[in-house]
Figure: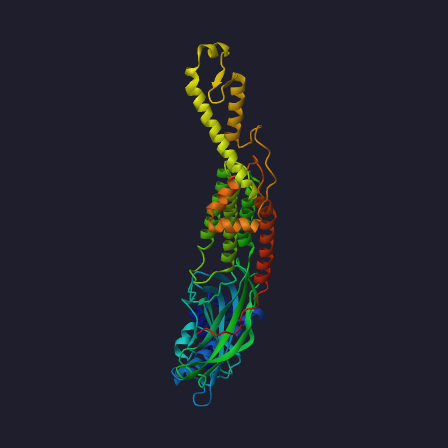
Length: 523
């Protein structure tokens, strides 16, 4: 009787075990299997197969728990693997999910990546039908881990939402895979002499904090550094990312490190649209003053000052996002050149105004032979003005006979003993008014003799030294109203030609820069 009840007892125990450890579906399968046994019928193959697999999994789980307990029973997590038998080799790879932002102001960059490390610990080998076990992150507290850190890191952290993003797997041969999701923020020293046509190298250096190369050696594995699909940087192009194994010296000790350099090339489209094109158009706009009449002083000066103020605003706005470096960038040199051309336009008009604009018109230099004749002409004009004053004063001193001979409006010329008519007076005053106010020679004045003009370089030289005597000589000649200065004619060709040549030299110089130094160590 007892022997007959033993199978039944075993079935009841299995049913209770399924009830305590498994879901309701396991309990239903156990109930069906028990009913078939009690009724003397054979259970279905599906039911018996599921129960057998669950038994196997339960046995395997118990086996794994026992294996881990045995592995960690005498394990010392303070000792590295193969201590005293050689260095522990840690193989590393990185999968970059996203990159950026890259800050020139703080000279740093950030990226989101999967950081994986693998090493072998002979103390964790086991014999099991499963080649690899996925363990809880609590297992990390009981085993040895490399003290990896980023030599040029700044504020890196592990993602913890919704749980710490870590993974650990243990192989039967003792190989441990330790993976985590990190956001790495690292410093990126930048040289901005070629900004915004610059190429930068942002390194990432990985190593052990305490273990020297005699204890731990880092190596890139076969996957090394990879980029996820769809990575795009708003300001840069990632042109290459070479990597290497290396060693560094710190405090007399040699340490093993891994280094990867992210070689970046800046996008120039933003700066072309917001800096270079507006500056070029402002410089071209300042050249319009060469076609404006020299008598329009206010118009030409206001145009030049407006261009200078606009360039100042663009220059200040373009420097906001850049560090306060002690050297000039490529964009600074372009802004300086634009300032120079606009200010040169103002100085050009100052020269035109100083030498060629006296009231209105341009005054060339007279020959020495004409100087004496001009002096005599001025003395005769002064004497004639004195005579007119005397005639007005002596008008009341005429005799009665002379007064009868005069017509209404006639004036007696006292010195010559004759009189002139009112029409002659009116015409003389009109001629004198035109000669003095309008700058045109009177009809009675002799035609000027041919004059000699000095070369432009000679005029510019006297403008620089501020020769006032030379300026008065130029004022002594007749004028031409609304005439075009020779300086303006030359500037219409010279300024665009110089600016075009300078632009060609500028772009050829900064676009042909060499690639950045790939392996400059950053400790």
